[in-house]
Image 1 (spheres, rainbow, N blue to C red):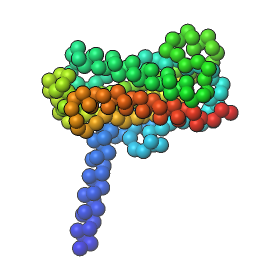
Image 2 (cartoon, rainbow, N blue to C red):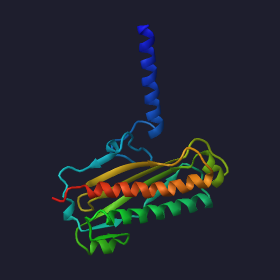
Image 3 (cartoon, helix red, strand yellow):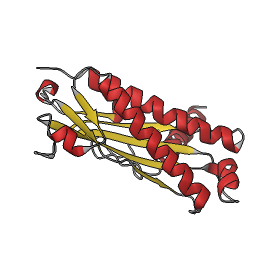
Length: 206
């Protein structure tokens, strides 16, 4: 009986490990080293990096760099159009979320406007889209697996290269019609941006 219980426990551990690797696409990266291709996994906190002893009030502005958006699907006009839409949604959502954090006088997609307002941070986003079978059939005519979205967002000091805060967000949908999955991805990038904005809001001012 004891041997059977040990075997069941061993099999359960293997299953959980396999699920974790499947979710992150392999060995999970740390929150600081996370990328959309090799993202951090785990809880919200495990996917969050905050620099030690950061003083967010020394920065007056944020420049939102154009998000990097890619996909594991074959590329065509429909795919490129959706990725462009997702890029725009990501940028606009981050601008709103960071402005709402209350820390910055200027949050802009124009670099010179950030530079002219004093010490500033760069907001970078790395986005990877896995369309899954339903959405892929709608856009490229074929596909397999479930849909998934990974968004890795950070605030970085351009003078020192220091990462101030970084978060890996997950989104997407398992099922539904193709347009429903695409719509959820659009909604998910907004939700992830809002969560990131709330993280920034909690950073110490001094």
